[in-house]
Each structure stands twice: as C-alpha cells, then as structure tokens.
Image (cartoon, rainbow, N blue to C red):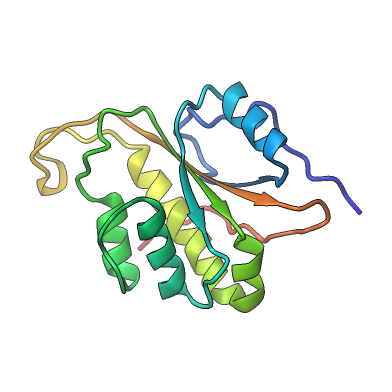
Length: 165
C-alpha cells in the first residue's frame, strides 16, 4: 500500500489552492500538521452518517455551529461565501472526519462537496472592499482549507479547482 504523502507543513495559512487536502488520519499527525502550519483553531465536521450532498451540507452547518439546515447547493454557497462574523481571522480550517464513509455512500455527492469547498476557498482567498458584490464591509483575504483525514491505503479523489458556478 502506498503511503499518504503530505507536504509538511501544509500551507494552511496560504490563500492558494488547493483548498481541500487529504492528510493521514492518526491524531498525532493531525496535531503535528496543524501546529506546523501555525493553526491555533479549527472547526470539526463529521460526515459519518451522510448519504447524500444535503446530509453533508447539514453536517457542515452543525459542525460550524450554524443554524441552517436542508440547504441546497446554491443556499450552501450563499451561507459559506456570504458576509460572516469570522472576518477578522487569517485562516479558516475545517477538519472533516469520516469523509471516506460519505464517499462510499455517494461518490458523486463527495465530488460535488469537494468541488464546492474548493470554490468556497477561492472566494475567501480574495479580498473584499467596501462595496464589492453589494457587501457593506471590507476584509482581507482569508485562507480557507478543508482537511480530510484518511487511513493509510485509503484514496479519495479530489477534483481540480473549478472557478465557475
């Protein structure tokens, strides 16, 4: 079995793509990866019970402590890319456990989810100034990255970054 190759440290404070990364699943490796990248806080999401894309969107909302449920693709994008109280941070890191379970249940849903998360990352990577896109605030670029811990020998397909929607 091939070992998972992880660049240490991941450039988690960078706004550059890719925004979704597979990392080794053991806890020590996760802590080392986050510490080496200078990450002091990260959000946790669990996809263990997700069977479709809507379930995954709900799990992310729960993991982020947001009140939204039953979101479709467009509503999820609006929530994830809209004005947010997290503006002052420099990096928004989400650790998604059990992504391989979701992939086994819905490979198409997994592909859509990782694509939309890459799209979200590309949006957060751009600064917002006063009146951009009708937003009444400004913010610096924010590094947005999603980490998918996977067991050795497990492979998850990560799509290329697509900037269209």
